[in-house]
Amino acid sequence: MTVLQSTVAFDGPAGLAFLLGRVLFGAILAFNGLNHFLNGDQLIGYARAKGVPAPGIAVPFTGGMLLFGGVGVALGLLPTLAAGALVVFLLVTTPLMHDFWAAPAEQRQSEMTSFLKNVAMLGGALVFLGLSAVPWPYAL
Image (cartoon, helix red, strand yellow):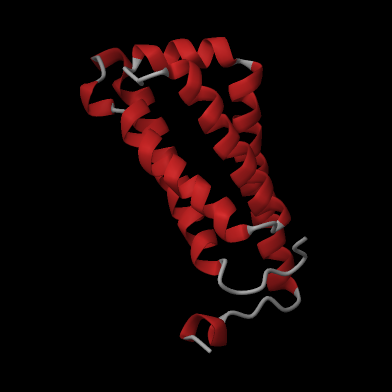
C-alpha cells in the first residue's frame, strides 16, 4: 500500500464533496469540449490566428480530449486516462492559445486571465490524475 492509498479517505461528507468537485470540474470541461464541435468554425479561426498547425483537425481532436476527459472525471470512468487527457490538453494549449506575453496591450489582460484560469484547471486535473490511483466514491 502506498502512502497516498493509506491516507486518502472518501468517507461520508468527503466522498460527497469529492463527487461534487468531480462533477463541477468535469462538466465545465466537457461543455467546453462540446463547444469545439458546436462552434467549430469560430474556434478553428481562432486557432488559425494563433498559428496552430492544421486547426481543422486540432480543434475537433482537442474537443474530443476535453469531452472524454470531462465526462470521465465527472463519472469516475477511466479516471487515469480521463484526467491524463485533460492534463495533456491544458499543458499544450495553455501557453499556445493564451500567450499573454505576446498579445497586444488591449488583449493582454484577457489572455492573462485565460492563461491563469487554465493553470488553475491544470492544477485540478493533476490532483485528479494523482488520485486516480485510488478508488473513487460514486464512480462508474
